[in-house]
Length: 152
Image (cartoon, rainbow, N blue to C red):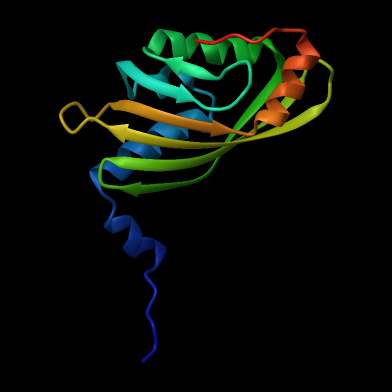
């Protein structure tokens, strides 16, 4: 028996409300429309960045998170944000992202990220994020700026 695969059109018809939320959220991320991106998060989002780098720590509200992204932009001369893919199951998603960065040393870096996100069933806002990134590349960017380690 021949296996039938769904067409892109058929897959789009099957999209859940949650998938649409995550896709819209990350479309803003890819366009670096950070105000719109952050509007999808609960004001008291719990965002944990794992690893040993300047950004590692637990961010317990949206303002701390916005400040962290602002610090990243200040540490670089250019950040181009990309979404590789998003996997959605119910009100949870895994997002695989990468940023092309030009550091203060004018070197090019690529940072790979993996995010696990959880939507609130009541508000449809992101309430929990687990963030893993390529810490070695991040450390190189940080060294190029002479910043020290900071924990949220």
